[in-house]
Length: 114
Image (cartoon, rainbow, N blue to C red; front, side, top):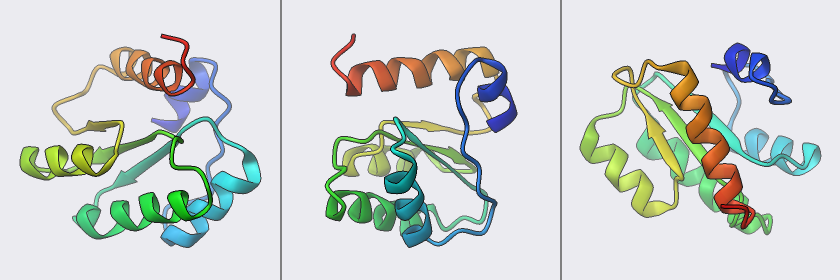
């Protein structure tokens, strides 16, 4: 996903696959990002994502869109959206161009550009 986002013209800040929620929030603050993308394949999305969302709120970034991808059941995806996640992508969402379009739409909406 990160490679495709870079190919589509996004500036991608990738810091590895084993970051804590606190490290993710710190990177978002330090890099002044327009969107946070989380790929969680461990099944811990219902623990990690809410912690990241709370950390962003605590840092004053409650309007920063968060997009989540991974093996996420539909019911969990709906719960994450209810908690403030802007979009959830799962393996059934395999159209990379469509996903990139969705990311642009999320960033535009978050910045009042839609």
